Figure 1 (cartoon, one colour):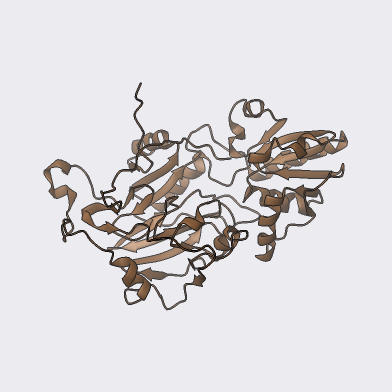
Figure 2: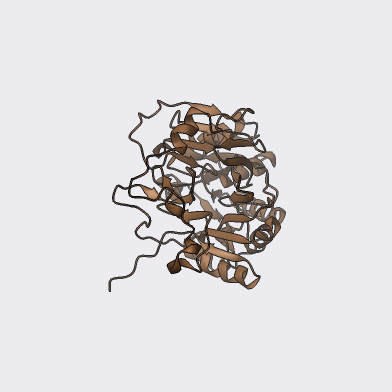
Length: 409
């Protein structure tokens, strides 16, 4: 469970024809009709860069129709009196995060022609005409939905999309999660969703990529969120489990369906605990196993678990009837929010443990500093608070979130 501030409002930047346009009047492709579910295929990007300017996909997607009323030449906003102090921006929010002057969108929940999906938490994969992701992310996302139209690439393999040079690197968030390095016009840009720079049992940890511009969420962007070492948290979870079992109670752990649940399954399963996990978690675990991650001693939840079994459920089902019917149980939430004062009491659980798949405040600041980026876009979470901290250190910071809707009363 991530600690996020959510905002809502109207989406700027859309013209009357419902198409969106980036800086300098460059057109951005929108939705292009419906596609029958399961009718498209997944393609791996080979070494010979199939998305260069000569490819049919590049020609189709890099040359969208331009309304005649728009200027044919880009306009530098800094040359227009009204925007004298407004710098050119590499990313913008137009109903989703968009790399300006390109066809590429990032983790967008509106239908777009080409979207980079950074990790398998996304539940909007089927909306897009084509997605760009790691092969592992696509495998996890499609385990229940079938085929999608996807371009996949392993980590650290460079490929091109028109004028863009792209390369994906580990983000450490969940299995297959990725940062994407974009090079254009002599500048290095990095977009990522949550990153985790600490060791993990199921995902390769993130490392800062040297860049000029960085886009990253501020999920745990408050000094409050300082997590203890991972090993200490695991020890605390095992002590909780042992106390429950010694008292004849089933320990129930609540963790995210993708990522943290599989992390717990591996750590606890290898420690010899018997696990009963909810079906939604178990299905994802099957994909993890197919991708080479060992998750021993785990069975799908069904019926009544034995008294020596540990139960794992996702947060949306923590009040499920199956849990309430357990003869005797104790519940603990596993999330970075566990460091919040009184969190366990507020959530009405017996315990809470701060095991997270994203950077805490200090790790996030170190990650940002490690990239050397002079320009940072914050995409969610505690944007205002972290922006103030970064600006105090001389970093240029932009907010990349939906605009706030003004209250009428």
